[in-house]
Image (cartoon, rainbow, N blue to C red; front, side):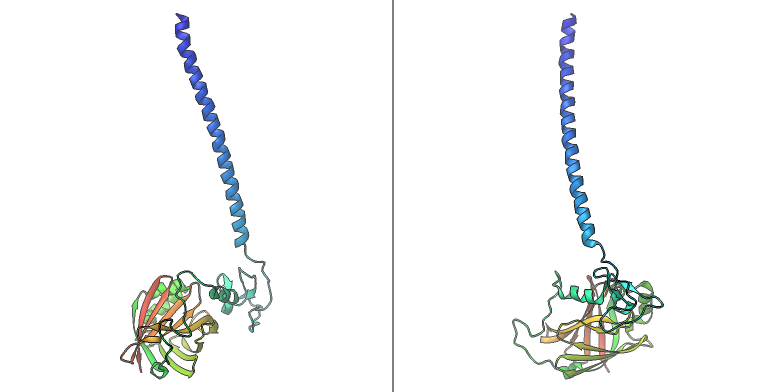
Length: 278
């Protein structure tokens, strides 16, 4: 009778012991896998930290940007995360200096529209009617979310509020006015007048980056180029301004020859402004 009771119990204990051994083996394998994954993650994190570690700061006493030399006796020194150079506010676009920013801009960017300088692949080069583009233009209307464009470009809330208060340069008591002249085949001189003041921009349409004054934040790197558009191979004037994110301004002269339609884009946000000849 006792033997009849003990045999099933013994078999049950053996099954339980096998299950325990199997569970322990699986636990050991899981622990080993977890340890291996942890080591791999730690290695990748260490490598990423090495790649993203900012360069050693130069702590120079004056701006190291070529041709500047502004001193830091009363503060205003910034350090480039990429090269570690000490630069002033006018030559710093967080987190890098303008020199490193220009080097980054020269590299091809996935999804960015390629610039065309010498002509369109499917059309022979034609002479741009610069006389039609030159003149005095006043901004008369703004459509779209210009505030979002400026935010993506790096303008803070205070500056965006000031721009919104004057209608982003459209109409009102202080409309934005631009005077465009074409002194050379590859040069565009643009004199801007707005509530902030006036400034002169010299844009060489060769696709290279050059500094130009801006309403806020000091000079910024700009690049100009003629691109193909609806009216011919060289009918759209495109200016790219570097900031937290590049802002692209494309202008095309409408068929009435008295209206310019400007499309401003930055990080997927866009707006349009209309300019009337004065």
